[in-house]
Amino acid sequence: SQFEKTPFDEIGEENVHQLVERFYELVAVHPALAPIFPDDFTETIRKQKQFLTQFLGGPPLYSEEHGHPMLRARHMPFQITEERANAWLACMSQAMADIELQEPIRSQLFERLTYTAHHMVNTKV
Ligand code: HEM
Image (cartoon, protein in one colour):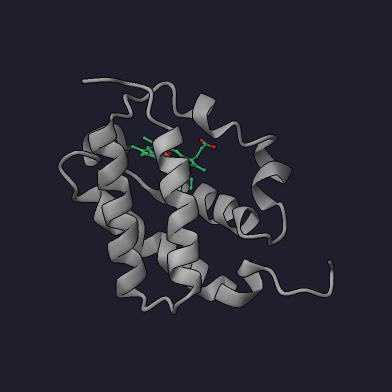
């Protein structure tokens, strides 16, 4: 209900923003991921902050600006292999550790992202 704390309330906006910024620093230097991302991460970071805010039960910032996320469809222009899904998750796990995101929310969020990342896979090698 409106009286319950969302995961977004629990993590806090500042931590969500720090997590996204740290995550894309790691993505930018990951050999399996960097080649499919733009050189300038400004917009990617901005959109991911909006998306994760709403994914965690905070205000629907992503949908307000971009409409329904349709994440799998939005990833179709990119070859998302199992290897890339695992690389994405490794960067996320490292970013969570680097910003010292606390338990149990860290594992809960990571579990949801693991499911979502594997759902994005659209290319067999
Ligand atoms: C956009 C890769 C998983 C959320 C993108 C883009 C790439 C990408 C290349 C385009 C970046 C840009 O042009 O700015 C991947 C890979 C994944 C993955 C390799 C591995 C499975 C995920 C997951 C989520 C996610 C699990 C959800 C938490 C987003 C969002 C965008 C995006 C919100 C922006 C979409 C838009 O343009 O509005 N991703 N992604 N991605 N990704 Fe992923």
